[in-house]
View (cartoon, rainbow, N blue to C red):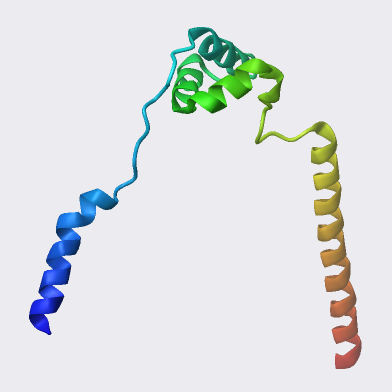
Length: 115
């Protein structure tokens, strides 16, 4: 049993590189105009030039051609609109207000019980 386990472990170690992810080639066709258009759109949205270049480099050919067809498809993410800030602040204020009100009601109830 020990020999079988060691053989299986050895086979697994030897075969491990065969189980690695296959990394495809970067671009089937080098489309410099598409890369430039997507990179410019990212920079228009406030991404630094180095970060935009790195992001474009990570795109597959299909993703690059998709975004290059209509660069307006690239939308900013991670920031909130003014109404989202307003609603979030209002909800946070309501939660704090409700917590204070519940605490005050509870403390009045405890004071009345102790008298």
